[in-house]
Length: 219
Image (tube, rainbow, N blue to C red; front, top):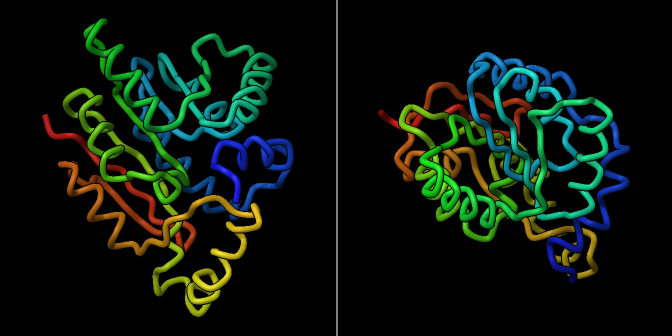
């Protein structure tokens, strides 16, 4: 079994070259996300991978920071950003938990908070999703948005495959072919977000096994 950082460092080159899965659903949720952004916003994307989404969204906002625990993912993302010439886009090699801690300290020092925090295909991979969601709530400005998409591999929407995943995943983790993965249902995602104090603005399942949510921190 390998630790999560090592797993994603090793996967980074292949991940960067892999074709987009469920491209139609990705474009659909990306369009919804874009509709909630504005030029003056300060955005943090947790678990940004190789920067594919960041490069699409950064031109729409004032500042965009992407973080990922994998240094290799961040290296590739930085290369992409340099080629694109986006001066408002930066990347840091930090885990989601480290990102929220660093950002909270920065907010205290500079009296600045993020307007939007995003986590796509992230929360089911984190060791403490409840704590992370609370930290995100704390670092957002009043009225700020948390936008997420979470695969729900234990949801009935996944059909019989959810039983196969439950059986095979421990073996794949043991031989280093899969990271730690939480097996969630759609209701788990909604409960996580509401439990941190967020109000859901809109939500849907795109693709059918992933829960996409735009949630707002009350004023």
